Amino acid sequence: MIVTLTKNTTKQKLKGSEFPYLEEYESDTWRKQKFFNEAIECYSKAGNKVDENFMQVVKKVWIDLNISCNTERVRNKKLGLLNPDYLLTLATDTCKCCGRIMWYGRVHNMVEGYAKPSLDRMNNKHGYRDDNVWIICKECNTKKSNSLAPHDLYRIAAEWDKEVTLREKQYKIYCEENMTTLFNGE
Image (tube, rainbow, N blue to C red; front, side):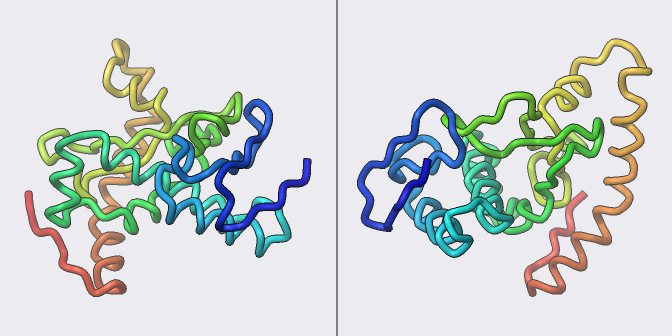
């Protein structure tokens, strides 16, 4: 199905869960007009095809939702401790723990068989902030929280340890490159 869209499109409906789901920005898929407009622009520039730039917009939508669905995350965003641009750098295509491909799309554009991403705290004492979060699949996050046997956690623990070790250095480099303030907490 070929779909022609413009920024003034009020409603464009595709059947079922076809991707990309390009309905008006008020839909649950796009959340905000700025995301919808950015997605349309990327889609058009790529010759009405989904490319890496389009997928970055899909990740931005996911990050925006995940920051705004929890009071601690909202508060930390307002305090500058949780930065959507930095979180975008953490939005990998595969889960670091299990290797499954993750799908950041929402609602009408969910692709069956892909893992859902989940924003996870590496240390629960420090909360949701840039230097303490990573994005892994929901299944690994749940396993990490509910595991009854150590063998369930070996790969998760190995990746978790590696992430904690690398994070301080990566976050410092990010802050220096973007001229932002480094968070110097516990």
